[in-house]
Image 1 (cartoon, rainbow, N blue to C red):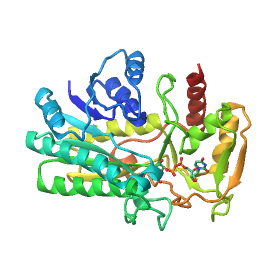
Image 2 (cartoon, rainbow, N blue to C red):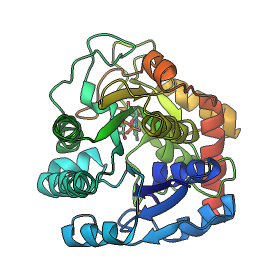
Image 3 (cartoon, rainbow, N blue to C red):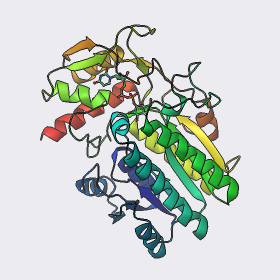
Image 4 (spheres, protein in one colour):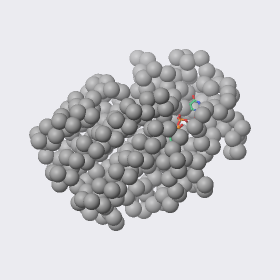
Length: 337
Ligand code: UFG
């Protein structure tokens, strides 16, 4: 049985990926410092799959602890989610973003290269494209100056990986996520935003649940079909499965070069108003919202061309925006209980 380390494995995307890995017969070891999640997610994973993953509460900024971990575990591959991810927060705390998102990556890669662990999957983001010149976005689209330290930390992470792959036996894949949303069909794991949600879907579900007064729609004067910004929302279960496909590609040595990157989205662009309408349909609840000014740093439109991922990863999405919104709403209702 292949043993996979999942850093940030109790987070939103990490926990869904752990479930899919276990379903595929991998043995999973999770490292998480619980900075943006709770230990109860571990129990939820066990209740979905019936398998208890090994769990280590390690802060990956502690280089010695990272070394000690690898001394005690024989690992076949790593999926690295652990990172700070709030765009706005990163503007106010650039150093903690660079320290957390880059040092942790470097410490892991140092251990991997010394120990000849060759398989590495990195959580990257469509934010690396900024406002792309053409849509849908293919992997040929150039990387643009980032809008935030968070965005730069993802760009730098990709460069660190590319160069490390060039200089060693390491094989790595960066997955450039579009907008992950939704919850596991069991409604046992989902997104757990701390405080006021910054992202659209948790803000919508909390508003519908009465926890927030109304949603602010950031801008209706974009050059899009209805004036609101367009994004590519992908069900988190589909996104989790892309990691399984990417890992299999590395394990079976099907990768075409030792550093590759793929867009992982649904391939469909939806405006904020379309998402609101779809949510109202999926939940049966009207949503209170008002139009306000644009949010700084937002791009007009971003959605993926997924041709490369479909072909090379032998992966495609199977769940719709409606499925994702229905699961997000059920998850919100479950939180109240
Ligand atoms: N939006 C609102 N009101 C809100 C929240 C969001 O109108 O209360 C709008 C945004 O302006 C945007 C869309 O909903 O047009 C989606 O916003 P999110 O904050 O949910 O997602 P982003 O596209 O801004 O950010 C996501 C990830 C980031 C990543 C980025 C890359 O959260 O980690 O995609 O584009 F960097």
